[in-house]
Length: 414
Image 1 (cartoon, rainbow, N blue to C red):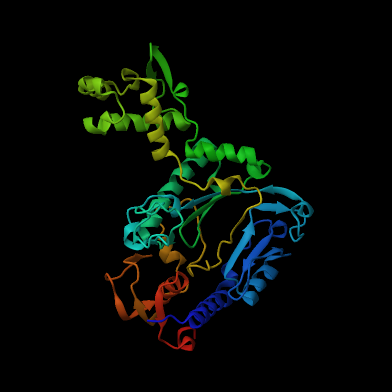
Image 2 (cartoon, rainbow, N blue to C red; image 1 turned 135 degrees about the vertical axis):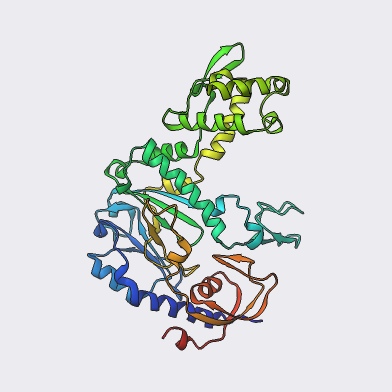
C-alpha cells in the first residue's frame, strides 16, 4: 500500500484548521502575554518563525485561527521587548521554572509492543528500545517510536514524584504549579512564582540535581560506628532526601529477600541477615543495621535511581526556553497540549482529554500498525480496511504509519 503524502498533509491541515476555528476561545493566553516570545512552525513552512509577540489575548487567538500552526511555542522567559530579534535586544526580565519529563528517557515495558529500530550499517532490525545495534554496536540507528497509555502512566508517576519535591521540599504552593501533557510523549511541569523568576542557570542546575538525586554522599546520611563501619543516621519522619532514604531503606531491608540483599551487602554478613531483619522489624530503628562505605554508596545509587525524578535537565536549566503552548495541538500527534491541575493529575485520562479532534469514525486502509498506540490495540500484523476515530487517524498519519484515508475529506470535516 502506498501512502499519499499530499493527501495526508491535507488531512492534517484540515484537522488543525477545524480545531482552531472552533476552539480558539478555549485556549488561555499565557500569563504576562505581552512579555512572552512566541514561536511557530507551519505545515508547508520551513523552519520556525520566532520573535512573535502579542498585545492581548484577542490578537493571540486571531493569529492561531488565521495562521493555523503545526507547532506552537511560547517562552518560559519574560522580556521587555519580546519581538526583538536578538536576545540582548529583548532584555530578559526573568523566567518560569520548567521541568520536562519524557518517556524517551524512561525504560518502559511497553516499548517492545510499539517501538522498533533499524541499523543502517548492518541491516539488523528489531522491536523495543536499544541505545545501539546489538549486532554491530552502531549507535547511529533509526528508531520508530510511538506512545501508549502504559508509557504515559509511567511518565505520570515521575510527575507525581516531582510534585512531591516541589510542594514538600521547596515549599511551593499548588497555585504556583501546573502540569501540561505535552501532546506527545510526556509532561511539562511549570512553576510560575516570583521566587524562581530571577534565578540564573546555576541555581536552576542545583534544583535539577536535587530532584534527580545527583550527589548523594554517605557522609550526609550516616555516622561512623567503628573502623570502616557506618550506621544510618536518618529516620522516615525527616524531610527531604533524609526521609526518602530512610523510608526506602526501611522498606527495602524488610521486603527484600536474601538474594536481592546479597547484590549490595557483603556476602559474609548474610549469616546475620535474619537477625538484623528481626531487630529492624521490632524497633523500626535503622541504626541497628551497619554498612561499609561501599555498601552505603551502592544503596544510595539505587535509591537515587528509584526516588529521583527523570527529567531532562537541559530544559530546567535553560532560562530562555521555548515550551509548548497549552491548548495548542502537537504537530506530530494531533493531540492537545492539555493543561492539568495538581489535583487532577492522578486520575485524569490524559489521552481522552487531549483527543480534542474527537471520535468521529474515519474509514482507512492500514498496514502494519504498532500493536499498542495511545489507548488502542491493533491485531498483530494487521493489514486491511477499518474505521478508526478521527483523533487516532491524525496520530497515525503524523507518526508516519502506512495509512490511507478512504473517506472524502469534506465529509470528515463538515
